Amino acid sequence: MKQIVICDANILIDYAKANKKIIGLITKHLYEIWIPLPVWEEVHDLSDEDATTLGVNIAEPSLAQTSEAADMFGGGLSDEDNMCFIMARDEKTICATNEKPLRKKCRENGIKVLWGLQIMIHLCEIGKLKVDIAAKTGEKIVKMNPRITQKVLDDFIVKLENL
Image (tube, rainbow, N blue to C red; front, side, top):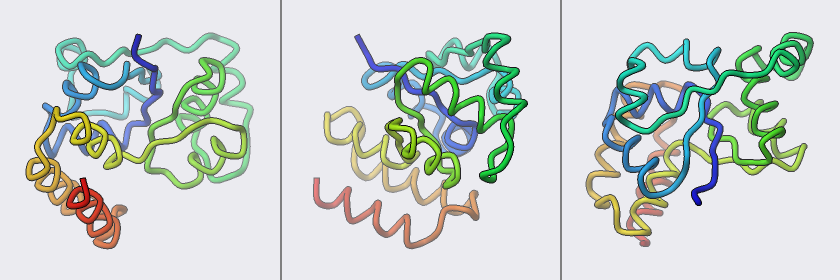
């Protein structure tokens, strides 16, 4: 059984724009991807049909989870970030995000975290993604997403080269 990953919108948005097929590889070979419904609503580059085709599970948070997320303040987290944290905590699973405040909150609470690019390294390690495709996808993501720096890309490329 694959481990569940609660995925923040930023990672799905990046992959949807750079190489949508990566999402399908993740769900087929590595993780079950769950995205909370309020977070899914931020992902405009994928349709509900895309989610089904790619194996992404749109998860409806409970009323208690929604209420808790709305009542959390501080730490630089949005309601959607809080929802990812709460669902990862409640499901005792991994949170995949590039948002530093959300990663910090998860780590402080014993929740494992994944970077978006890190997932492609895992796919390469198991032979389900070619290193050159991962590198090209990473380059596209960095060009589109100003929050991901050239240094992050350079570090990613070094890790790919060392596989």
